[in-house]
Image 1 (tube, rainbow, N blue to C red):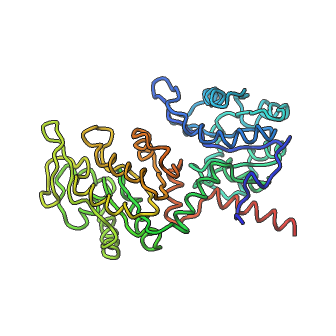
Image 2: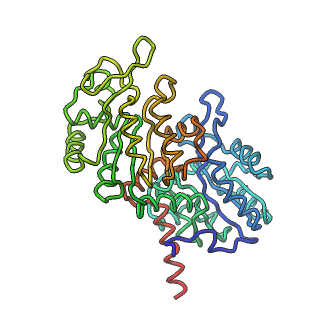
Amino acid sequence: MREYNTLDDFDVENKTVLLRVDFNLPLDKKTLEILDTTRIKLVIPTINELIEKKAKTVIIAHQGRKGDWDFISLEKHAKALQKLLKKNVIFVDDIFGDKAKNAIRNLKSGEVLLLDNVRKFDGETEKKPAEEHAKSPLVQNLAPLADIFVNDAFAAAHRPQCSLVGFTAVLPSCAGRLMEKELTSLEKVVKSPEKPAVFLFGGAKFSDAVVTIDRVLQNKIADKVLLTGLPANAFLKAEGYNLGEKNEDALADEGTPEQYEEIKKVLTKFKDRIILPVDFAIAKNENREEIELNELPTENNLFDIGEKTIDNFKQVLSSAKTVFLSGPCGVFENNLFKKGTKEIFTAVANSKAFSIVGGGHTVAAIEQLKLNKKISHISTGGGSLEKFMMGEKLAVVEALKQAKNREILACK
């Protein structure tokens, strides 16, 4: 039995459902037009199910943050949703005022209403327990008009913010289909991964990865960890390698002496389970050239892993039953340095392993390589995914669990 409710636990017919989603989309900085609707597409199954079951669906979402350039009304999001649903979507430029409340009261079964950007409410981004948020004007005004609260915003599940957790204290609550799918897939990796499990960390950040690497190896979630990109460079530096000025500079923002001490501790504990690159690709005369580890330092940027590393990684991955990918292997946006990412990601996609991909650049690489359909699960989470993989509790999930516990206690 799940610790939280899902849509299977409720009859939504003719009920007013508050659905919290994550429609925080990438926008063009000049025109403020929506560049990508993936986050909307991923919630369509939940919305369609509510429509088919004749619920009155009221959607709550955010875009940007007050003061930022991408903090805009959700009117464009409503049009994008309408196009994807192929059904009418009502939009009101209000959150919990009379205009919004009247629109909710007038909603008919099977209809969809999108309220305006919830972050226009100043209390939205405050971090508080669900019971405290339940006292807010947002919850006090909307909850009496609703029968059920559904949270499908996994990408924001680590935030204890008003519209994300407040309604769970006062309404029957459950996870939407996207939230359910994310948690089911990630629990499979964290709680009972099929062995051997191989995790790959790459990309242009490494500080958070160090903690995650330590946790997944310590808890025996991962059997092997492959490192590329900045995480690999940071571990090599901690081992005593001089990477060259440009590469050392790229590590400077995150690389404190304390951070390198932490990496040394992780290496000491798990040296045989962490696999680092043995060669790299650099740009020379506008061409790709490969150099070996013993040729460091170099005056050039390390833009990709080399052939020997690709072969080593493929060998490890060939026997894996579970694979988690977080971060590309190099600067995949440049065709000269796409090789590592392309070969490793394609090998994972074509394998029989249960594969999970997370993080914006990783997902972008998977899409560019047209491997989407061959990956078992593509996560929408950023911060929420990282916290989940580190074994930390997610505020939204905990709120949903507490909501179910209250229902159980009320029935006793």
